[in-house]
Amino acid sequence: MEQGVRRQGRELALKVLYSLYDHDREIDFILDDFWGSFRFQNDTLGEPIDDLSQKIPSHIKAFAEILVRGVVDHLAEIDAVIDKYSTNWALDRMARVDLSLLRLAAYELLYQPDVPVSVVINEALEIGKRYGTGDTSPFINGILDKISKQRTGKNE
Image (cartoon, rainbow, N blue to C red; front, side, top):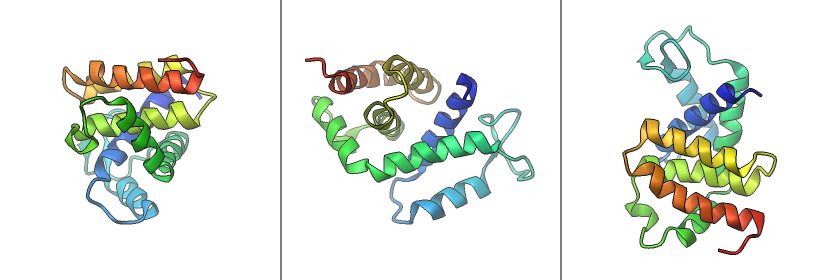
């Protein structure tokens, strides 16, 4: 799968994960609602539009769903790891976009060994620049670096 496709899938997954706060609905319902309600101009990630006739390519949608379902299935473990390495930051005090992005990248680091560590971290940093604040990239970089060392078995 080419890099642009994976980036689009990650960004869509981030949007779904961001929307999961304060929802007790099943993930299938949330995904159906998301795919049925949102379309984007020009490319998959542009501004939302009302024309639902524009379809998200199935391979991008499938990749995004793999990521979202993976995060949801392993949320307790992922949050425990993020909490372990986010010194002085409680999860409930983190910006929603930062926490959503950390969860997404942590899932890939911990449960997708075929994706290189450098790719996961770089993608998270680039997406953080687009959707987060000026503090997002340095904040998540520090935590993801520690998680990546856990994955590779290197000491901190």
